[in-house]
Image (cartoon, rainbow, N blue to C red):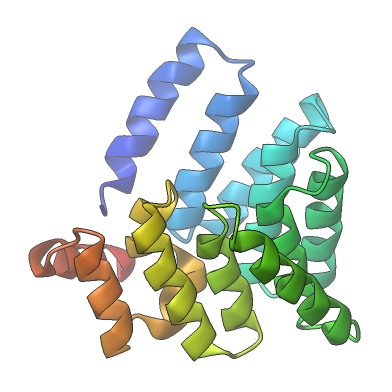
Length: 199
């Protein structure tokens, strides 16, 4: 889980084969994001957006990076653009709510979250991003409940929890460790992850 350099090396090979692939560029940016190499991730994503301004994945990941660097207005802008080009994708909506939690539009962000909570009852796969958004509002209990339900739903994003920067604030929480265990991340892997994040 901490093998960021190996992942980046493989992506570089893919870039050689298809230098114009926006998906490859975004994959590289996401690995850089997970490695906490935010400035490099931003540069990669801005390059992708320059190639194709409406590519929602680049906008979404850039929003996530901006959340971690405290650029909340920029994050909100990127999530808004991602929502516009995906007809309101729930992950982009959750990201927008997280960004708004740090602005004067906090009430608007909470309203978006409550709407997503209702949607999540009938649409699996949303809980992971809901957890990140609730953490932005300082609601650890709700965030953990969302992650537990993400485990129940076998969310495709769940393997990222070991390296997701947005979850760093609860890594020492015993309940979060239970979620990691449920996700199949044993203690040895977690120790390796922690040592990798301190690099």
